[in-house]
Length: 361
Image (cartoon, rainbow, N blue to C red):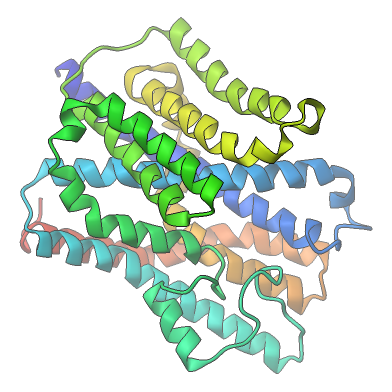
């Protein structure tokens, strides 16, 4: 195999990265059920409140990794085969919406059951609509509202938005000719979006970063690799940058008001470094190709969609009991595996048939 072919086969490591990111989100939501409501007092979680806070921060970064991954993978799909726009978008929307609809149905069933048991529920820690109506449910099925009964769906709205324009973006010669320039501009746009409070400017460029990474590592036919010692240095820098940013943009230096703005650009640079290490190195790739992370990566989308109804049911039905919610946390993984087998896998096959003109690869 050529070095380029070997690099292409390293996509398994990205699957492991996706699995780790999904695990971080699930842990974060489990902890935040107690941490954000104050029900961690009197439970073992009371003594690890900083950990709960940390996972809340990491969960945001995990979703940003999902966005960059989607840009990377969509670009790879578009480069691997010739599609019409109709084929591409129909396949993509089926791939996204079918599992989403299943998760929404499960979540609505949980909500109605809790209501029937006279449980006072705040949906996702009170951050989303507190009443159900036919209109609100229809809007949620279309992924268009600002608030969702099923919290993680906010990110899927941006997945759909980028999917609609990815085909056009992929055809742009500027992305191939000037990947670094466009990449820097994308990070600058995301940072500006945070400063202006514009989710459109903040999130869509994150997908574009994934496209740029693909173009600069795979599509450009660049076969250079990095040595393990440089890979270790890259991983260390990627982990250190957000920490340094957090310290610098703090009350100690009078820059706390710029913390979240700086965090966007610093985090995206760190994610970019991690991707380069995964695609051009060997050490990090071997770590993310271990079987447990690969298994998590396979069910990551279902895990992301289905975990919150399971946790919500246990949390509210047990009157905020720690052990029952912990049991539900463990149960999330087999539930996600069932969701993958019954819903996501058929959706993937349907999407693949549409993309390939009803012919198997």
